[in-house]
Length: 131
Image 1 (cartoon, one colour):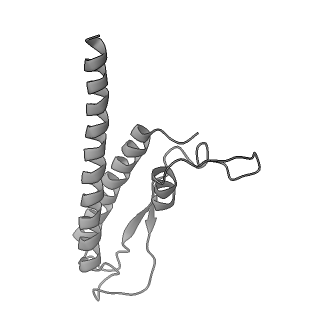
Image 2 (tube, rainbow, N blue to C red; image 1 turned 120 degrees about the vertical axis):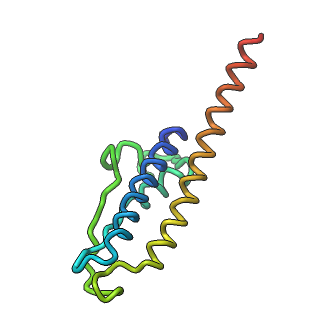
């Protein structure tokens, strides 16, 4: 059974919040010698959960993503590449700013969808209570 929409949106919001913190830390440390940028891993699980329901017709077919993986799939990883892009460390301000802009759009999308979800529930409750 696929993950409920509400839970997927909450996980996406949590991911975006953590990603924003990591990107901010990278930008703040752009002048710190030998600092290794960090990144957040989550995309594969996000794609599985946001990609729609997985349908199977046989028990030997692929199983759904539910029940697989840790409860909190967000992982902060250190980028150990030796490229010293800025001359001081491996933080590239252009890349970090582009990722921050992309992350902001993802957060806004998930927040809007979460609001729509609760508005729909509220409408159902209001319309159902009047009968």
